[in-house]
Image 1 (tube, rainbow, N blue to C red):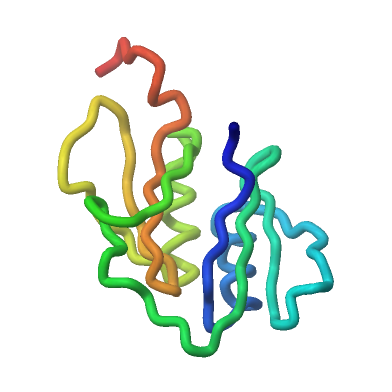
Image 2 (image 1 turned 120 degrees about the horizontal axis):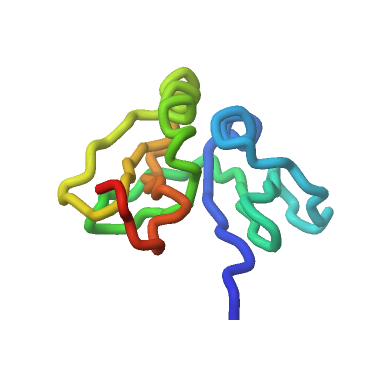
Amino acid sequence: MALAHITLATRDVRRSSAFFEEAMGWLPVARPGNIGRPAAWLTIAPGVELHLVEDPEFEPSPFEQEFGRHIAVTFPRAEFPGLKTRLQARGATLIDPLRDTPFQRFFFRDPNGYVFEVVEDDHHEPRTDA
């Protein structure tokens, strides 16, 4: 079994799609025509997508946090500084982790209020430089 997609509601699909495309480098893919409302599909990784669906009544949950609901993605550690710059330039808020881990990571809140954790992509490998 593998993760296929994550669906997030947003008040503005175009803005949300542009945020993830420009900040994260996720690429748009063709979406089905049976949605009946503005939507966008983005490829996060091979076989894994983010589905954005517009809902004018969307409100972020108060449970979006490190010890609550968040979405974790991997990213090359050497590219963290550039990613952080792109995220902030596009309206994300960087969040320091509440606890230390043996690998590098950080959190951010996207313009919709969702919290994402960015973990260095080799975080399961033993560290020799720590």
